[in-house]
Length: 289
Length: 289
Image (tube, rainbow over the protein chains, first blue to last red):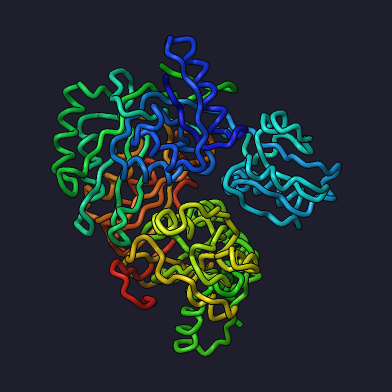
């Protein structure tokens, strides 16, 4: 039995991604699988490390709001999770309400990421509404009692909870999508992209650029560079890097050996995974394998 | 009259930073100055561009939670704001409540950043409490009616609103501090560090590392590299870079000329400011000038 952890409850974008993965699994594996909802991304990731769940489907990056910090921070801290697969999910936000006109809406509830992704629409159409954050887009629906409350959630949540859509496609950028990683404890053996994290010593000239040059000198293309605080003191950072290449390739191996010499200590380089990659998401969910 | 915009209401960490700057101004300038509270960081920044306010004091980076994305995104989008000064504020979180025991607390309200910075403490001491996000640490205090509600806020907010502190220093990391920038429309002429942002073309080998090499080749030390989505499509990024050096220096000028050739187009390189810098915050607020 494969148990797949995700940030719930039902109706979140993470659940949609997890359902897409479940449907792909059903076509490719005979083993039975089911989803299990967790109240936070961190708890879903820890469930895999603690063997409560087999896999976790977690958001890593949104095309408008950027990295999901809690996912990166837990990947580094837990240190045992490996990327099994990547999914890209187009994100559409709708305004759900029992009210019949925008003019009557006084309060809008949603997850801070969803509120941020609809900021311009809200300023234009509901300039005086109070914006109230919630733990998930689904949790925001609890507040839809009277006609003056609205929530930003996925159109799927409207169907699931039988709530009317007052306005559709309210995200500020049409090309809004979120990249998810399916995480497990087995190392993936096939793919085109490598993701790794490392910790560099602070306040030393070149300490941030030298590690990146290990790749540039070997013509290895970096597709993403993301920094996170090392949590020792202000100005010290970890880097999360994604690159094109095979883990077994000679150039990658040489770059990783050189990189290890630039990092903070021997435990400061973590290979998060080797996986298939998509850079051009289409209107439907991508599942690359 | 100098008007200083900040994310309010009174009692937020942004207000503490703005008050420290106000007190420094009183010692160094004869012009009268006062603070003006705004409901969001974006609104405080826009107030300066729209000449409602002279300056805005905004958080840019926390030592535990990392970059403040809304500040970086608005710096790029507004394009007219320049760093006047930098401040580093130590952050202490306290649990405020009218209740007398931790055992009675069922709900904890706070800004998502504050909840994240006390995550381990909350899991250890209040594992069953419901965590409810709010727009600011001060706004969370509105919910403190009964003994089962608590809020995470600065100890100063407890004094200001006459609320009891149930637990002090509950942040997971003792060395927790936030870096603020004082933003205005005048370019600063004095400093030791330069901050800039640029947009690189996507999906071209070396496009992420080549711009950084413009600095490395000239022995210019980068102290921070931060990426943000370019908001065109997934996988396209802006970079925010901080470096040691003078804007007038020959090496910096040569690096900037070379960098301009690597960026997306001629408008893709923005100098955000030249300012004094601190990397070792102490127990009291730093104001470098």
